[in-house]
Every structure is written in structure tokens, then in C-alpha cells.
Image 1 (cartoon, one colour):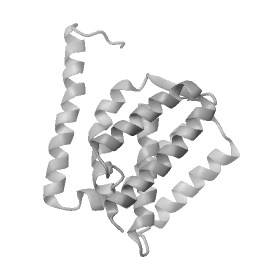
Image 2 (image 1 turned 60 degrees about the horizontal axis):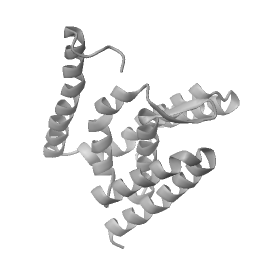
Image 3 (image 1 turned 90 degrees about the horizontal axis):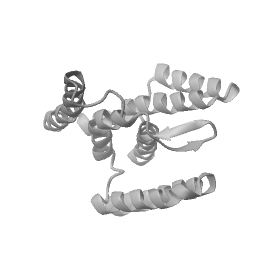
Image 4 (image 1 turned 90 degrees about the vertical axis):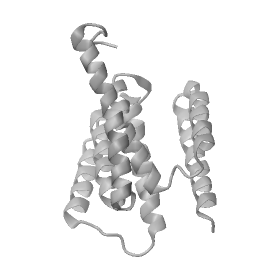
Length: 187
């Protein structure tokens, strides 16, 4: 089966599930979710390929962190912002990569036990912040399983490093503009 077709199917299935969940929780964001999904489909057909998705999320992370106070909607008592969406996306991509890889994945027993313990802890004492932190922990840990495929060669790492430095320069310039008084500290 063609990888692009498989990625498109996965993206469509996952996108439909996410839109269904969003429409049941917050009907007003369904249109926004559909627009974002459509944009992703237009920009790249294989956004769920681990090699590309990991690099895209890691490079975009400094820019995503600029909007940490901007909540898109609320689930339970927890506001969902760009950081939460990026973390959930990264966990989803890692899960798909592990399932598609075939063969036995390279597990780290210590990491797996950490993830299981954190999951059980949040399940026993569920809080909105606990769930948010669990998603972020899982997102960071998922890089352990897929980053080698994405950044394993020297040219791939150099491309990533160049793009990451360019992305990091944006918050740096904004910070300098805040210090000089051109931009406000709250936005």
C-alpha cells in the first residue's frame, strides 16, 4: 500500500474523530477545526509521516510557546491552547509511527514505567492540570521513540538545526523589542 495514501487515510480518520469530539464539546470550534484540518491536507499530504511531523512540531515549538496564554476552547476546566494541541498531535504521530514501524520497538523500561506510573497517578487523582501535564510528558517521551527516524542522519539534523535556530530567533527578537519598550510585555 502506498504510504501517502495510508497517511491520508490516517489523517482523515483522526481528523474526523477529533472534529466529532470537538463538536460534541464545543460546537462553535467545529468550523475552526475543519478549516485547520483542510489546511493541513492542502499543505502536505503526509503530515503524519514521523520524519516530517517531528521536525515540524519541534521547529514550530518556540513559535507555539509564544501563544501559551491564548486558549482556543475549554475541555472540563482546562483551557486548550496551541501547546496542548501540538503535544496531542505529537503523541498521535508517535503512536502511528510505532504501529506502522513493524517489529519490536526499542523500548526503554525506565521510560515505559515512568509513563505508566504517571498515567495511573493522573487516573487515580484526575485534575485538569494533571491531564495537561500528562499529555505534555507523553509528548516529550514520544520523541524518544520517533526522533531517531526524523533526525538520525547528519544532513537531516543540520536542516532541523537551521530551521530551529530561525524559529528561536523570532521570540528572541520579540523579547529584545519588549526590553527596548517597542512591544508591551503582555500580549
